[in-house]
Image (cartoon, rainbow, N blue to C red; front, side, top):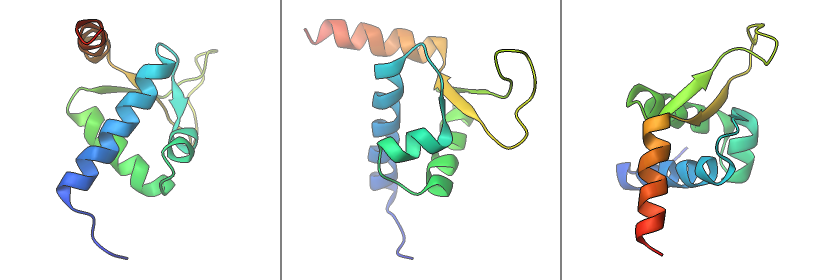
Length: 93
């Protein structure tokens, strides 16, 4: 498999953030995000993990009943990131 440059990973990460902003405040499963950006699920999961470490995303480990997911993860923008995106969108109008 060919290596993906850091620049391309950043652009794909931007696509992930754009998608999550468009559905915010809802959270989405890794599989759905990878389908939306047309990327491999494991690759997407790795990028999501990196964004989470930076504090840009929040990983949701429990369902609405408070039960831990056994193998799934949902993701959403962190509150701080959402506010920055929202402000940026209003400034561009």
